[in-house]
Image 1 (cartoon, one colour):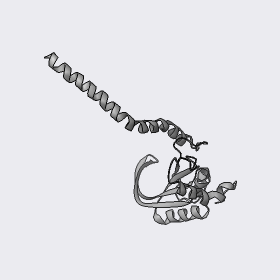
Image 2: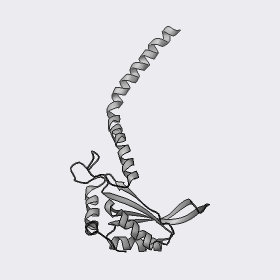
Image 3: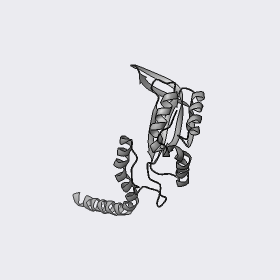
Image 4: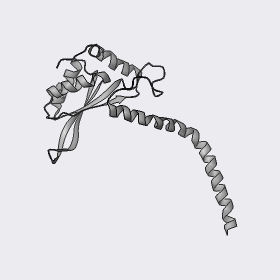
Amino acid sequence: MSRGRAPAVLLGGVASLLLSFVWMPALLPVASRLLLLPRALLTMASGSPPTQPSPASDSGSGYVPGSVSAAFVTCPNEKVAKEIARAVVEKRLAACVNLIPQITSIYEWKGKIEEDSEVLMMIKTQSSLVPALTDFVRSVHPYEVAEVIALPVEQGNFPYLQWVHQVTESVSDSSTVLP
């Protein structure tokens, strides 16, 4: 009986080897992106954008990955979110703010589990402006502890990323931003 199984096992091994040669080229791009993951995670954890373009940059566009950020702020209602959104765009701390209504936030606050309906602001800005943006939001936000978190944009539509830089350029050139 073992003789009858040996060719099947051998054939299965050969089939697996052939399949690995067929799938290997398709997996290489995925594997190369996975190698960039630790760098991206370290960049997010450190809060500072990379200083040089990486292989993940928009080939030849001149965009420095991480030089634009998407910041997220939650607000208690649409009125507050619109007021803050309009102010950060007028002050050129952001190029664009999207308001996402009716999100549900579940969190712990002062030892109690809370659940609230909120509005999420998605703010596109230069990474160098995130500290000024954070200071401004904290100065006008009604929450005791305002949520302001930012993630660097590694890739995207180059004309859009360039537009974000252009719209917020005058602020990033000045040393201070007044609330």
